[in-house]
Amino acid sequence: MLRVHIGCAAAGLLLTVAVASAQTRDVIPATGGNITIIPVYHGSLQVVHANHVIDVDPAAPANFTGLQAPAIILVTDIHDDHLDAGLVGRLRTPMTAIVAPSAAAGQLQGSTVMANGETRSVMGLTIEAVPMYNLVRGPSAGQLFHTKGRGNGYIVTVGGKRLYFAGDTECVPEMKALTNIDVAFIPMILPYTMPPSEAAECVKAFKPKIVYPYHYMGADMSEFTTALQGTGIEVRLREWYTTTAK
Image 1 (cartoon, rainbow, N blue to C red):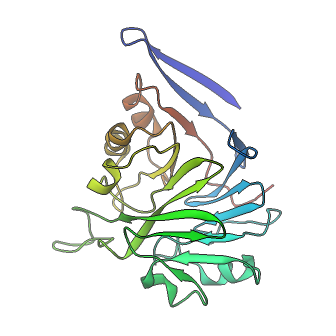
Image 2: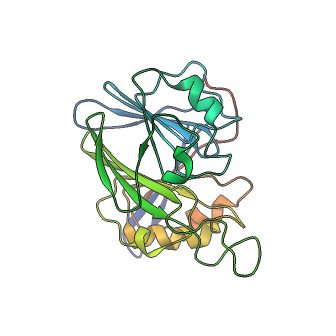
Image 3: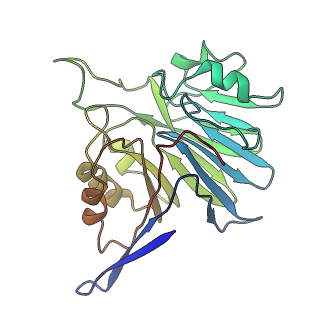
């Protein structure tokens, strides 16, 4: 892993940019043991803490081979890079809890449905559903790629840390109003979500301690890291575009 520190002398603040190879297992100190973050592909990842294993948006071509079976699967939306009922079916065990918005739940038998703004306890973890939607971007005039209320971002509290998985969204007011986020996963791809510069401005608003750009295929990450210089927010750049889990 290459670790680059970019300082802002005038402000006396620091931006930390961590660059790593594919399938890096990041460690975040937490209560009851470390949290391990495993990027898998695009918007798919696994989070491990003690006996909790969480898969987020497992969807082809993401390959979870060799990773632990999930206790919880979070699904954010109906699009096929987030909802893959076949892969979910292969990953789940009889004990796996699946959390999804109502628009996706019909394809996921036995899932727990959450609506925007709802908080639930699932397998001993607190999960909050956060609105994710487009404000202005859509396939044509008067249409949006993601309408408000259809999909969920999620905040999961695990090991005393609040992890935010934004899903497909623009910089909506609900995101900017978030507080006490330890780790955030933020999308930045056009035309479906937002450009890196806009994503950076949103991150500045709610100030997570650590931010992972994800769901960024082809986007220029230098725009994002440059915009966050001097904020004290740690930016972790990871390789999300390999399909082989190691």
